Image 1 (cartoon, rainbow, N blue to C red):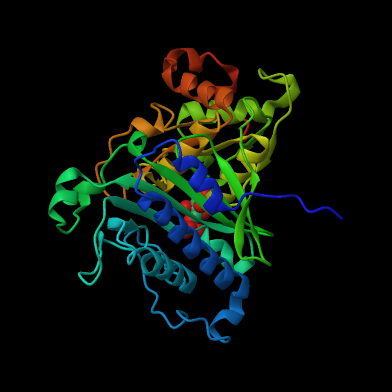
Image 2 (image 1 turned 30 degrees about the vertical axis):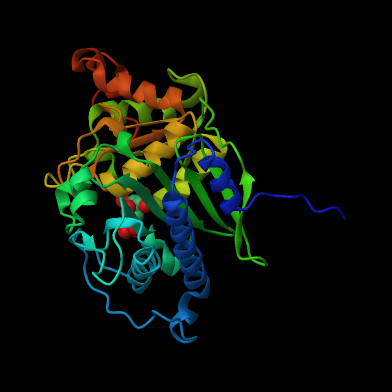
Length: 364
Ligand code: AFP
């Protein structure tokens, strides 16, 4: 049997660094620390209920409610601790922000501070843990404002409020049947599979590309009554299938773990929608801009797909707060552009569309 020679994540990062001959290596070291945190989380996730019994090093943690008002699971807190503990010491970070922490995380004074900001959702889809369905971690790397780098001062919320176009890297780890790391450093998207024997992420998907067209969409249809018209129109047209305006049948998926949906879409195309809706007027969307929508948006765009609020490209949105929520649509480019077009079209013309008459396809 011949074994195929594969690049490790480290080798991939070294190759990428050759594009920037003056780079210090700090950035690569940071990404490798993040990858280490993801490997540790993968182990904890794999132990499941056994984790606390088998002496998981950070298993005895206090859970609570995060700033989103969502119940924190033990693994949410454990994963957050892995991220902070494995990245704070290296001297590469000026600060961090996470879904699980109300305020920015300061690098302890015992460690050196660096020039990058790390923003992350340590365990996306954690409501799926109890049912043993795929979850993941999402992260984004930004450059700290120059004033922070020069002074080494504590970071504040405003330092993180940078549009997605400013991201230097984004990625996610997927804890599914295999553990994978998907990464962009702004030069396409690469996928790595964790070799459990070596404990190394190996390059298995060198140039991921999202197909431009798709016949698959993902949305939580229980929110139908809260959707805005453009989304209702899009979904109605998909459901109408071959005999409807799209002239083709569509398939639907909903995992309730955005990172898993993003991965499926990267692998075979599709469109994901968690749009702005009227369910809770205090929340203009379900998902978070800085550590969910932006990193996934960067990955999609780097893979030839598209990410949008429906009204504007996701990566150009100017953030207003650390835990800001936003409507998110991403995936196959032609479908996302169609949804954006539906948002631009005047309401009058939609009223002419029989699919928007009193009886929608999702209603009696
Ligand atoms: P959790 O991390 O709290 O499980 O939330 C997951 C998530 O943010 C995203 O990954 C899913 O797409 C979405 O929520 C699922 O939301 P619904 O519960 O409305 O299906």
